[in-house]
View 1 (spheres, rainbow, N blue to C red):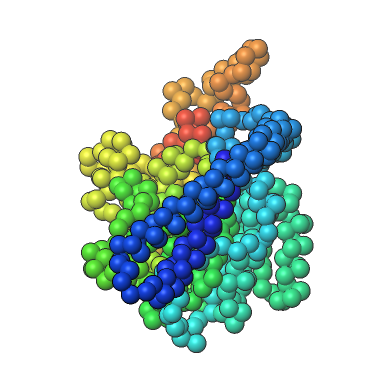
View 2 (view 1 turned 30 degrees about the vertical axis):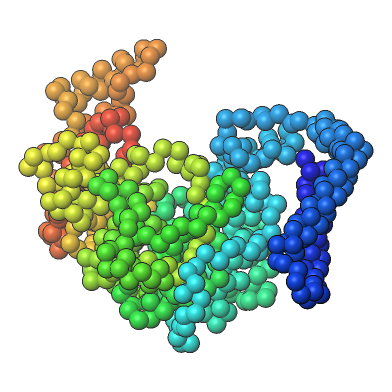
Length: 573
């Protein structure tokens, strides 16, 4: 094949030379022919010469091709075969793995094992991430009109919050490097890393050493906050927002890469309207080979199950035919920037959301109903890794279902029935509050009672008021600790039965200790202050939460999510 290409090139070159000579000759002939020579004779002569020249050229090309074919082509073919034979064929150890569908053909077996193990841990190609530069250059996917925009010189400062749990260290470093590189120095006030209780060793001292290295050049730029227990996506964002001091807080995932000019368009929109919450356009970083795919700007919508989804912008935006213009959006996909004070004015984020899912929809609904708006800014681009799976939550449905029901109960009023239908939950006629929300409040009360640092804090439940936690815990503990156990016999007889049962080989269903603790009637509470006495008007949810706690105390084996309440040592009654 190579021989024919060479012959073709040589032939084309010779033909080009001939045409140039022929044109030059024809010009000379035209000027030198004597009068009386007809055009037909001239043309006939030219054609004869062209035919002779082409015959010579064809013969020359044929001889050259035969020579090369006999001398070179067999060697080239043999060389290619030899190279293929010499190169070892490494079998794929994981042919069904998503990681090796289109990547990893040249890896040794040991490298395949390492890459697959890291893929299961992180959900993306950490093996490759550890081997590519931290400051790699990404393609500029912005619209050309974005490149000529001018932004105000007095933009607000920005603090970037990166949240993560058990993230690959190289991924975190690349996110930090990209933010520092692509954010103007005078605008970037801080980078806050919120670690939601990671357990991997390289996120301890190695990450701390990396932070210290950056802070030597730019003192105080990077901060790290570590949760003492895993608190979930929403609470991690709240932690970052609470520790931020810049005018604008941008809350991002840690598996991102900022691109050139990502910050200025967001800050300009917030400077123009402090009540707007803005989101960049996400470009997709593929989880296997980490290449970047450009995404077109779209709004961030959601269905009735409150799963996020991309939707087209409004017809008005489409009629502008200008991809550099911001577009309104019902919600955000989880990465956003907002005026730090405005976010506090609308109540921040919902810390009651667990694990993952629904928190971004909740924020969008909250912003719109509290007088703000949400916009997607196409001139701001963030490259975001889309994991193949989320290692911290293999099954997202339980957490998402719970969070969706919470959002519907708080914000959607009569439309929450649509959320129930989307999750295939039977509608409860005449029930003003879903059971899941009652259990959620009960869990919050359990956690509050077990908290050793409750004194002087203010605790927010779902009712209209804020409660002093000490008074609330004191009341709820007194209610929940007096458990009603419907024993039909007097206590001494049950005590004797418990002693007899303790002597049998199998586990007894009751013991003398349980009788002493549980044989109490809560039909009456003499002298017990009510919530009204504490200046608290309890909502239906909180009253039902107390009932849940009472049922839990006498049937705790049926509700494993609620732990048995024990008073903290620092609280006395």
